[in-house]
Amino acid sequence: MAIALVLVLVVVGSVLFHVLSPWWWTPIASNWSYIDTTLVITFWITGFVFSAVVLFMAYCVYRFRHKEGATAHYEPESRKLESWLTAVTAIGVAAMLAPGLYVWSQFINVPKDATEVEVVAQQWQWSFRLPGKDGKLGTSNVRLVSADNPLGINPDDPNSKDDVVVEAADLHLQIGKPVKMLLRSIDVLHDFYVPEFRAKMDLVPGMVTYFWLTPTRTGTFEVLCAELCGTGHNFMRGTVLVDTEQDYATWLEKQATFAQLSTPAKVGALATPAKDVAKVE
Image 1 (cartoon, rainbow, N blue to C red):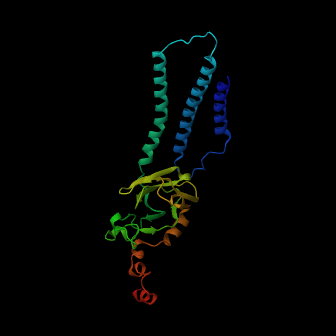
Image 2 (cartoon, one colour):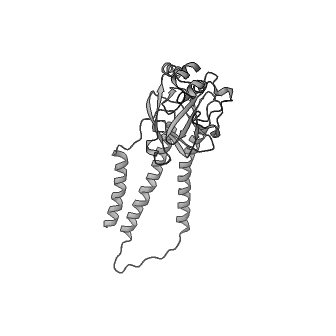
Image 3 (spheres, rainbow, N blue to C red):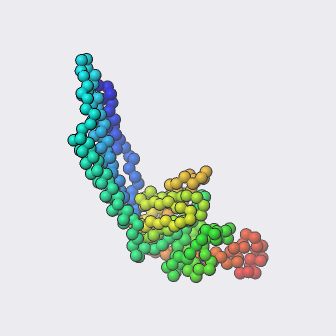
């Protein structure tokens, strides 16, 4: 009786914790409310199954408890029960998979008017690259990474010259504008995650991954690395600011392009005396 009661209390406590505790995620700031809906559906299905299984265990413990003179009934299999379990399990799995597949289809099909923004991860900082006035990002290669070119941008690509480079600083996005995030890692496995955006993806060395989103409210949001990437993993944080169209344009005008950062005065500024820098300029 005590065991059956404990099992019932486990179910009741789990339901109350879910309903009353303030564990819910942060308010959403992108178009991916579909992901929240999918998670809620998964919670309902798995929560129902969990409650049903534990309550059934409690019933069995109480109903078939030991009694003097009682003899157990031997029934090694039941085709009817197995058929019911198979059918119910298949329906439950399909109910969880269908919303996820629908959302995934939307997640990987990027709108044609989306602006490309490159996210570059390295131990332990975030850097970003945005297209310049030509609207195109130049190519890059990890073999080109150096102290003077930390993002490995191809200097011979004409499209690279006007690319906006944001190294180890805040990223700004425009509200209501679809953005395709191109994800690239210079060293080890990382994961770009902004909880309010509900979108995340691994950054895998040697390949470019992506996802897209549309920011739906202005504000400042923290970027986290959601993949263990070394001893400084917990310090690998950044900031994304969602601006109005005017604020975004103002910020963009103040950013340096790859061509500006690649000038001799910029590249050799640390090693060249101030008077020599003045001569170069």
